[in-house]
Amino acid sequence: MKLQENYKKLIIELICFLYALLFVYAAVSKLVDFERFKVQLAQSPVLSIYAEWISYFVIGFELIISGMLLFSATRIIGLYAAFVLMSMFTSYIFIVLHYSSFIPCSCGGILEKMSWNTHLIFNSLFVMLAIVAIIIHKNKRQDDFPITKNSSKIWILLASAIMATTAVVILFLSSEQAIHHKNPFVRRYPKKAIELDKTIDLRWNSYYFAGYEKNILYLANYTDPLHLLSIDSDGKQKRIKLYLDYRNQSFKSIKIVVQDGWFYLFDGTLPRIYRGNTKDWKLTAELKRTPKFSLAQPMDSVTIAFRNNTGNERANVIGIFSAEKDTVLYSQNLLTRQIDGIFDTDGILLYNQNRKQIHYIYYYRNEFITADRNGELMRRSNTIDTNKQAKIKVAYLKNNTERQMAAPPLKVNSISAVRNNLLFINSKVPGRFEDEKFWKKSSVVDVYNLDNNSYVLSFYVQEIPNQKIQNIFVTDDHLYVTAGTNLMVFNLGYLLKSEMKRESELKTDR
Image (cartoon, helix red, strand yellow):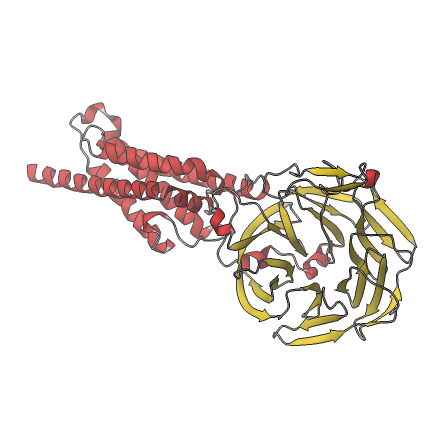
């Protein structure tokens, strides 16, 4: 009998030693590279927004439990605590595998080389070891401690497992809600959000995206504005010459847009807008009495969304020009002034063909606007960074008749693209738990769902040395990026495709 008790004691001590060794090693490993540990937690689909305090909680709890397991007086409590913590770890991995929107590259920590399924088995074995140690443990004062009575142990273990699992489920649900709708500037980088398909050498660094039709991408060139480059799905290139009947016109700032079987030549400094058919690539019609504009996007063959600075005190304003009706409608309250109304409202004007909506993304604050075809405000939305106020300084010259930036501004949002219900924004601000060195080598794109006004995910585009990304363009299946003389073609991953509501689905909803 005494021999049997000695065996039980040896088994308990061995299990306690294994737990203490595991937890101490895990805690020390996390402390040695604490910032990396926090980054891994921040990328967790279960615990993203709680990464800060959970990183301290886990390490502290592991060390405390290890100490409790080393002393006979606190050993049984330490075993229960170890069981609870390992049950939480196991529940976490199970949720990641079966219920999260994506599975991170690794679990993190000392066992990051394990696959998720292997890690689940490993944790489950340690849960079983804790149960064995608790069941066979016998305290000298057995009658005085209810948690050491065999009749109570099963119920306590069951209750502990339920509480541990419930806690992780609550963290998961609340984190998911917050990360998409009340994000505290914690980006989520799921693996394979995009995958590089091919890189095409364009030979010139002055190309920009003009449009996309019938699986053909069109690029225009700032230095050769009367030629387009078309690229089909196989990467085959074709040079297209644009024919202009208005040869006597002296242009200053040309932009070409291809859309819905038409192509347009814009020059807001003149101002002039010409239109032609993509069947013959001849610019044969001028949209008469065009207002001046600094930005413009065609909504249909006779209607243009534009921006100019004819608002109060020369502030930027969004307008709708109809060549058919010969009308200009200004939306005076669409752009909100914070400082001067010009620099602080500078941004990107997009037109969503699928949604028939106008989008405007501010450069210097965490906001973008959605309006209908008439320029009526539908909603104001925020990007996940925290820069609500434009951080710029404006100098007024020549008796306030000229303005210029008095200091380098903090740019929040840069290039952008929209496709169906997804808005893609190249952010310039590192989020929490992100390494700024990483930002020097990559460009980060945040994706937002316009349907439910939520943040979806982020991905990074690895930059070619000395060639920063200049433009992005998105189709149903691909992301196109120009960087220097290169065109990079990425396949959209499962998460983005499943989040994107395509044109056929939009028509069904209507």
